[in-house]
Structures are given as C-alpha cells and as structure tokens.
Amino acid sequence: MADCIFCKIINGDIPSKKIYEDDKVLAFHDISPEAPVHFLVIPKEHIVSANEINEENSKIIAHIFIIINKIVRELNVADAGYRIINNCGTDGGQTVGHMHFHILAGRNLKWPPG
Ligand code: 5GP
Ligand code: ZN
Image (cartoon, rainbow, N blue to C red; front, side, top):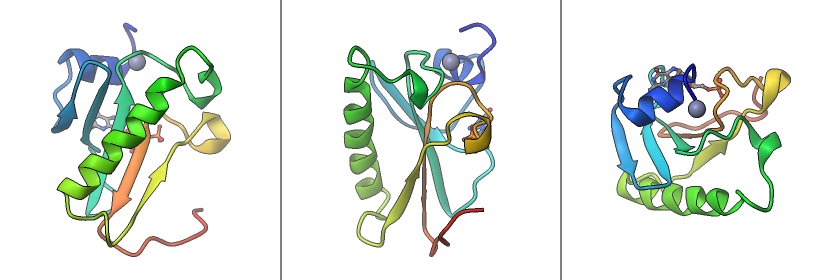
C-alpha cells in the first residue's frame, strides 16, 4: 500500500533494524521502545487491523506467533516472560494502519495498561 509506513519498511523505502524476515512476515525493532526489548512483527500482506482477520488470511496469525516464539528465545527473554500486544483501531490505540504485534520484554510490565 503506497501510503503505509510499514509497507515502506517491508519494501526498504524506510530503513529499519530487522530481526527476522521471510516471505510472509517481518520483525523489526520499534523506533520508540517502551521496554528494553520492544519489537514488532508484521505480515508482509497489508492487513489493516485485527478486524480484517478471516478464514483466508488467518494462517498468518499462527505463523506470526511461531516467529515470536523463535525470536524471544533468541533474545533470551522467553523464560523471564514478555507481552504480546495488538492494538486495534482508535480506542485500541492503533496508530499505524497495518496490523502489527508488539512484543515487550526485559522489565516487569504493569497490568492493566493505561
Ligand atoms: P501502534 O500504536 O499502531 O500499536 O504501534 C505503532 C508502533 O510503530 C509504535 O510503537 C511506533 O513507535 C512504531 N513505529 C512508527 N513508525 C515507525 C518507524 O518508522 N519505524 C519503526 N521501527 N517503528 C515505527
Ligand atoms: Zn501496509
């Protein structure tokens, strides 16, 4: 999608600190980290938000979670724990209209979020 910053990160128009990439997903460090470890995992397909998950595209969700599992082990935060967040829509706090999962780790995270 032309105006989407995450599509631009996928195609290399905007640089990012990549952690993992395959033909379906990209993981990269958040530009404004809220924890010692804060990365995002996004599908390469432009899916706007969790509202658009359906039978046809839902396999990507399982794949994203498998990749998260792999990355948190590599970053040595799997055992200590982490949080996976998907913000959906305005009230959910979504600011980028390309579905993404935040992974936060490396400190004791508060609950509930604000
Ligand atoms: P949201 O608020 O939509 O759930 O999360 C969007 C996230 O994308 C924010 O945490 C923000 O810091 C991150 N972000 C926005 N623009 C960029 C960028 O150009 N590069 C990277 N690496 N992260 C970005
Ligand atoms: Zn996009």
